Length: 288
Image 1 (cartoon, helix red, strand yellow):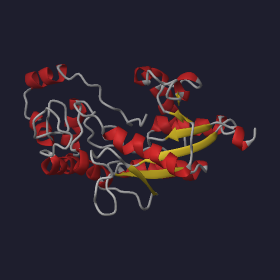
Image 2 (cartoon, helix red, strand yellow):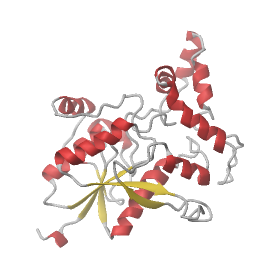
Image 3 (cartoon, helix red, strand yellow):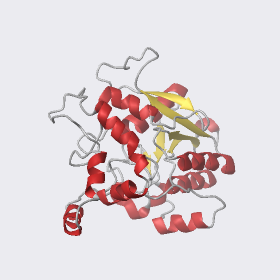
């Protein structure tokens, strides 16, 4: 098939095991069917092991992975739009990418703190950034491949057809988490990040139990999140009806509150966990 006749396919690579398996499968099976573009959106809060894993996937499989980061302010420090929702893509690489939350903090400085009540960070730091990069290079009318497995179909976008989203590990090569883990166990490299940290280390989407384990085992992880809470907790640029201070975690909890839970007795802790409704993320936060 002539290159111009092939449809375009964007592979949104999260940096997780499932997403990486999908990446390899697509290049092994669909390379002759699509013009492929693989993009990894770095938020600055990925663990070093995740960044090394993304680089390993590119190097070991000879796949060109484009690294991008979101910019919410121009070179003069002004937001790109009056309301702050406009975001531009900056191309980086493994060596030049942000490692201390810089893209994330710039977003916070413009839009305030995201949470279950305002879940805009994936949209602002991943989807819009990737879409802007595609516009910059003239990559148009593309399908999007997302790494969601057959055992997590509840995460499938209900408007996937009209949004041109493909789920190869649901429809074409159905995979479960155990199957993915078995495949990686036989591979010559693997993602070594701690399961609790995922690739956004203290994300507000994680359940309370996981957040508490992080507080116990890797308390320094919360330093950045508490610092951001202290700096931007009273910022209300979106003019929400909720009253500041704003915190990342459900119930408007701060990192300090997560540490406080460790002092609860077993009965109080059981009650807290019973009322926990939000499913925690496992290893990635999808852009689309």
